[in-house]
Image (cartoon, rainbow, N blue to C red):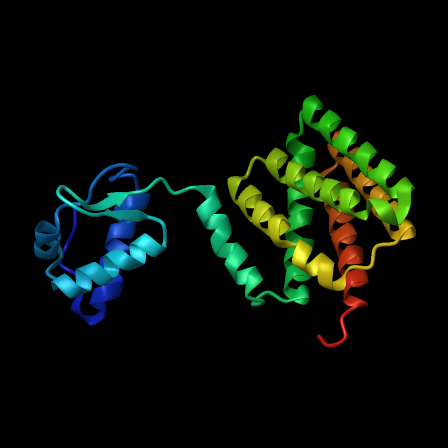
Length: 239
C-alpha cells in the first residue's frame, strides 16, 4: 500500500501517499490506516514525521485520530461541506478581492448558464420560472425587500449550477454564494431600479435556458454578473 518516503521531501511525500490511497478509494470512510509501527516500517520514516503528517491529514478532514485502545487514524467521509469551508476561509480572510470575485464569476456563471441551457428539464425550467417570479415580486416591493431579493437571486444561480450537472461548479458556486453577503454588506447599494433591472436580467436568462440557447444564456449570465459587480465597485473607495 505504501512505499518508503522520498528522503528529499519526506514529510510531503508521506502526506501525498496517504492522500492518494484515500482519494483513490483504496481506503474508504471508516477504514483504519495500518498501525503506527507498520506505517513507519512501510514508509521508512520516524515516529515524529509520521505523526506530523497525520496531523496535517486530520486538519484536511481526511482522517480522524481516535484515541485509546484500538485507536489510530481512521478515514473520514470527505463531505462537500468541508471543501466549501476551505474556500470560505480564503474569502473570509480577505484573500479574495471584489475584483477577483467579479473576474471569476463572469467566466464561471457564463459557462454554468450555457450548460444549464443544454441540460435543463421541463421541471428545472419551471423551478427557475417560479424563482424568477419571486425575484420580480421582491423588486416591486422596493428597498424593504432587498434581503428577500438577494436570497432568491442566490437561489437562481445555485439552481443553475445544480442543473449544469457538474459537481465542481455546484461546489464552488455554493461556497461563493454562501459567503458573498460580506461583499454585499460592504459594497452593495441596492435600490428599486437596480432590483428591477436585475430581475429582468434573470428573466431573460431563464428564457434563454428554457429555449436551450447556450450562447445567449452564457452572454446574459456574464453580463448580469458584470453589471452587478460594477454596481458594487462604485462603492469601493480604494481598489
